[in-house]
Amino acid sequence: MRRVHPPLPSAGAAYLDPRGDGRALRVSWHSEADVVVLSLWRDNVCTGTFQLALEDVPGLVDLLASRYADVPGEWAVYRPDTEPVRRVRGGA
Image (cartoon, rainbow, N blue to C red; front, side, top):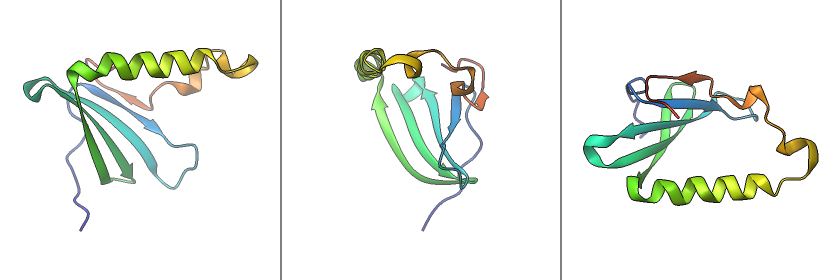
């Protein structure tokens, strides 16, 4: 059974999936639990979550940055449409 979760917490961001159908990735910081939660959404329903320990965040960021740097030509250029669709206080 899928559970409807409350809105994005006070620190985080949401990104739309280019495939559409209401898919989104939400990233939320939970410093009280020392985790970053990555959650997959379909419309307003959370379909799955992953808790990433704060100590592991730099490794994930480094991995994404290094792979992004390897992308050829025009794809490596910053694109404003890659900004989160929703950003809240403290969001990355």
